[in-house]
Length: 155
Image (tube, rainbow, N blue to C red; front, side, top):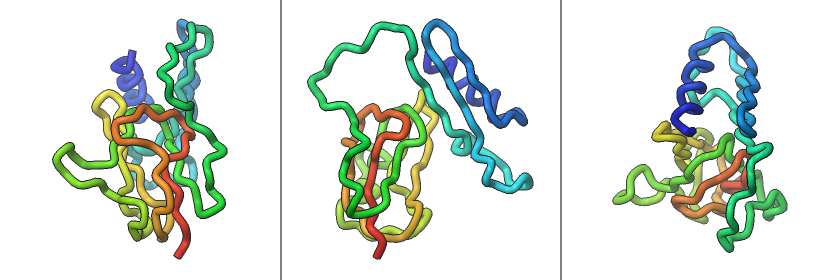
């Protein structure tokens, strides 16, 4: 199924569509372009905001892990949330150090992590300069759309 989703995302990325909603066999895929970019800018697969939800299929088995919560502490800074469903990676490769640690100073645009959807990696960057106060996902975890990933405090 993820291969088909990746192919659909590539087709949508190559099109002029600003929004596509597809619902098949209990799966709903909603893709919306970030229209805040100027029309002359090129767009990549990092541009679409994608939401994939299961609408009528049986629930997934319980793993014993707590589900991600939106209530995670953000009073100490600005939250960075996942723009998609995928695997969360803190490192550029298994043998490399993490992009950031709690206490790391970051500048706007610095890489924080990667999210993998069927071997299509999306780079998640810092939205502003500050210090990493919290890392809310573990390396290799499956993250959900809008799940809290990091909290960055302004310096």
